[in-house]
Image (cartoon, rainbow, N blue to C red; front, side, top):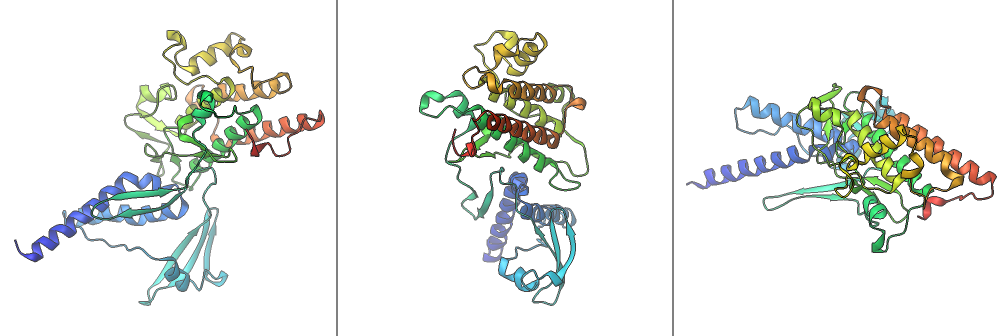
Length: 352
């Protein structure tokens, strides 16, 4: 075999490896705004080139570095702005080869979504680099308190719920025609930092709704969090995340697991147990009495009503934007009540 053939074979293998990595992790990369643009320019172009050249790969895009784009746009000077939108600004740029380009600079990503810092692709390894969140998962803080973790107060639980709702609302409206659905929201995918600020993680199952309201295909997820209607219809939409979030909210209110084999057959799924308790006016029996006291019972009941709506019929579920807004209102009401009774925690976000 000639050196040319060996070199060509190695090059093709490397590019195929690169394509495979991008296909596998394109959803993760889309979570950050700037990576959304990267995915559209790179992944879709690769598919077109593959079809066009019948298997011989020809990459038509390239990776720019920050300094190159700063120079092209005169350091993103305001005089170069050609369009401004909800998610960023478009600048007119001039490359070294005198080509005129449009450079989209996205706004910062949501602080409650675990941030992708970078990636590495070579012939031996494919890796992604994320923020390090050092205070374990929400699941462990709720269900494994015997490991030395502090019990989360009701106020902290409401804060965490509001933060994750905001993260999902952000994803669902991240672009005007391409919202992202997580499809595996659960307490093990929610990380807490040292200040008990929540971060949504793990986007392997996520899908992009490019101009669509739903996607077809086998519905993946975790036991106890799966939307029953999606399993029956084999479709996924933003309402899947709403349902799963509803289960997480019930977890926060009850301190019970989303799925538990030790519970009676009819109660193995927390959603079923919760909804039946509400229907039979037994909500007080399922709420966690250790964290929900008389003074915050009204807020807990309103949060439970919101969870009930999230777990309802798909087309009657609220949007995550509505859920996030209502949770913030409930948090304010809770703080206002505490302030009026002299029990306000002015900075309860810093402690469990």
